[in-house]
Image 1 (cartoon, rainbow over the protein chains, first blue to last red):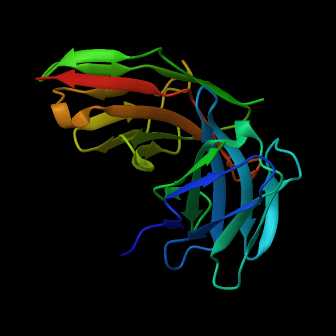
Image 2: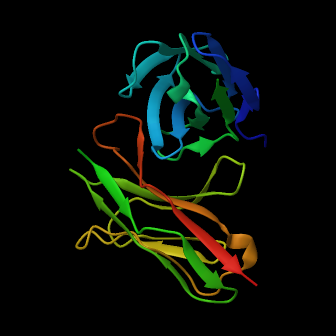
Length: 111
Length: 114
């Protein structure tokens, strides 16, 4: 069974640009979660999508947004990139809302 | 709010040594508890889990017991290998409040030397 996949693997952007990260959940999973792992800040919850709806968001500014598609895949968009947005962005999926299974992450570098 | 505290790292052990990584939590209600492992350059892998008091999660020789009275979920392994070198995260899930999010500890780096 394929796990959670994310693309791209790495990304380099400059300040002020916009970026889109993609996530495909495990087949059959309807919930997708996004987390940011920034150096020195640990793992921070960003967003939770379930059945196409945003269910919860963490303490991040509105320039972090996303959506979930009918096939349950998801995109995370970050506008007006700032240097401190440099981080590993992790996507996770879940069927029951209990266990979350993570993808390999997208490493974003903002210059 | 809910929180997770892990012991400071890095932890450096020789191969075949006994491992304990301490994890304590603060939560309202009865969270589910997890240990995740992150190998260099990779995402998180679920290592083990427990959903209620006195549950013992186990996987790949690692164990952790959900202790409600001490609000702890310490990770243990009897004999570590070089391949266990990684960052270990303790996490809780706010199941009852249904926020969807996992709350993570700061992570503990384990280095095992041959």
